[in-house]
Amino acid sequence: MAIHHPEDIDVRPGSRLTPSTRTPSADPSVGELVGAISEDLSRLVRAEMELAKTEIKQETAKAGKAAGMLGGAGYAGHLVLLLGSLAAVFGLAHLVDIAWAALIVTAFWALVGAVLFMRGRKQLRAVRVTPERTVESLKEDAQWARNPTS
Image 1 (cartoon, rainbow, N blue to C red):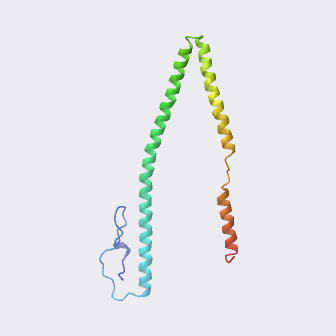
Image 2 (cartoon, rainbow, N blue to C red):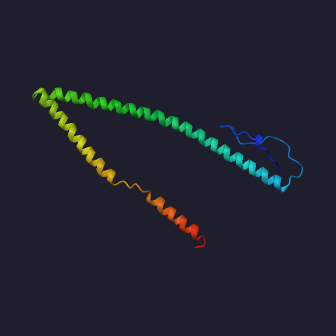
Image 3 (tube, helix red, strand yellow):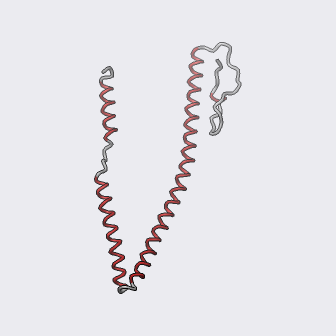
């Protein structure tokens, strides 16, 4: 069994976790073996953490770009509603006075807003603030910690 020293292991992102070819001492003691295993395990954990951080950074960048595109789509949708409302006002102006046409379109959007508000408020009231499953799990853990043999 070869003992590997931490400085011999490359833990940069993209590198393989491989030790160098340093020659170990002839007959390592149990303490040296345990120390080497501990060091190798520590390096492995650090390498895994570095890999996780790199992956998270890459995925966060992708999510940021996607969020920007969704924001742009929301802005474009807002413009569509605004210009569509103006077109509806001018279209209705051929049937009624322009002031009445504007009032009709405004009333339509007020109705849409009121319906969305009421539905959203109803759904929000149904949301539970307390994470009940987590609280229950913590209670079970506390019970087990008090009586681990039961």
